[in-house]
Length: 151
Image 1 (spheres, one colour):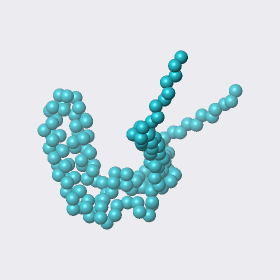
Image 2 (image 1 turned 180 degrees about the vertical axis):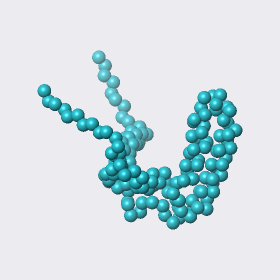
Image 3 (image 1 turned 120 degrees about the vertical axis):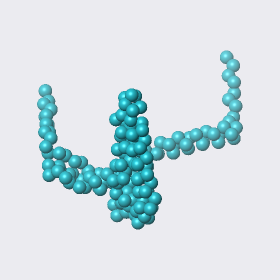
Image 4 (image 1 turned 90 degrees about the horizontal axis):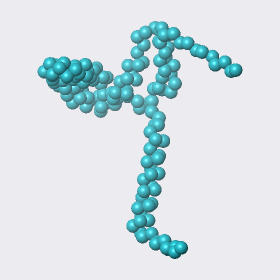
């Protein structure tokens, strides 16, 4: 049996191996970087985002909502025939008008957080886990805990 000698790697092959190894290392670190703590002192809209939202964002949202409503009305016969009238209503009518109700300068996450702080039901228990994360439990619901019996 003849054993061939292994050719030494070229500089190009070594560079490619190092680059591939580093890119795999960086890609594996991404999930660890995803959990970022929120600085509560700087949470929420700033003066600049409120001004831009007032001058540019809300007028464009209004135009988008009116245009979406018009598009929904025009497309209604076709969406009824296609069987997706509910989807068309959600995307063309409901979502643009809901966006108009977002707090001034807020992102979707900030708006959801602020709206979750308003308690409209006395039977709702709020457990703050780690601001702004929380668990909401409705006490009108029955909670059944079944103990596990060891044989």
